[in-house]
Image 1 (spheres, rainbow, N blue to C red):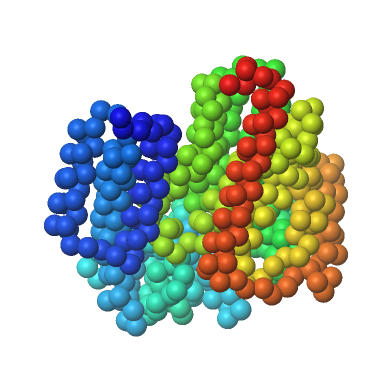
Image 2 (tube, rainbow, N blue to C red):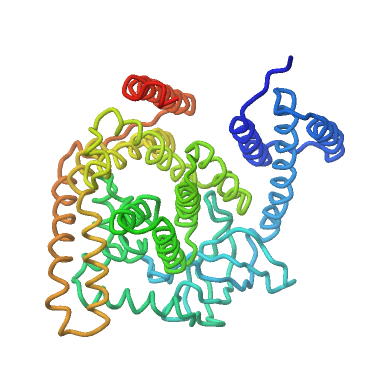
Length: 482
């Protein structure tokens, strides 16, 4: 008799196979006829199988592996079109993906996507970095024409155009971006620098206006994640909604949460990190609404497959993509296991203990990637997060109020900006003080296989904690747990 496998295991395997096929497309792209031959065999075997057996799982994995690799190969071919543009003068129509800032050379500097080569009207995938002159300012969402020489770039951007001539073709006058700009002005009216820039980073992830000294301090002590739109920000928002609407129906909680998520996505103009975090939050909320237990690992694999399929560049080049899912693993897998062991039932759902454990777990899970890619370690990151993380919800709330007061007028600023100033001043002072320690940041680089070892160790610890927690539940609840 053939062994029957669980449906969850089946889903794990097919999403993982798709991701592996997509990732491998950068290196291995066999002949299409070979794919078609094996794909048809695997698809036939999958359809013919009436149960989820090992054979049907392997067949499904092969189908998804081939689909992922074919899709990735097709996308990678589109990226190769940049090769013909490197070292040449180009004229491109692009859309700014962030507000421009001035570089050290006095040029406007920003990233852009929605790229069209004006020479042949060819649309290019991915994004590029731009530095140049011609207009006083470029805002997120503006369509601009760029004329200059393109150079290759070894990063998430496929190329860069420097000393470019920049011409604004169409200003983005959408309501949401107008509100966003007015809110940033409101923050600048209500709060002094660098508080205004810190508040903008906390609420909408805008880091372009962050002073270099503050950015370095936050990075040195392991707090730079608080000014990046991420799962951390959304965790705070969703947790706050669940707490505030604890006495209301699940339907009201879900509707209100979805409204906030939508607003957050629009306000950040579909920032990739916030879209990833939103997908995780939406799927988790839907599972909670329908009373189902969504397996955290399956949730991460689904979101990883969706986002990587939308833009395969993430899985090939984006360190931020990998850091996001490492942090998600810490927040939704490792942190709950630690809570069950370290906290009593009464303290498990309190804001401060939850935030501290989630932040620490996220730091642990992202550290191997940071050591491998950047070769640095924040020795006091856990201490700095313990001191600062509990105040982030208050900082976000008070900064939002201060921003609104800055929009309304000077009369309200004097009163409603005080709480934000107090909390933001504490965060700034704590980060500045901690960054003064010579041992705050050190250099330490690990190899790829050492990184794999660390993640294997984290996975092993997670499995041990899961087994221990199950044993405790069985003792506490007996057969009801089963």
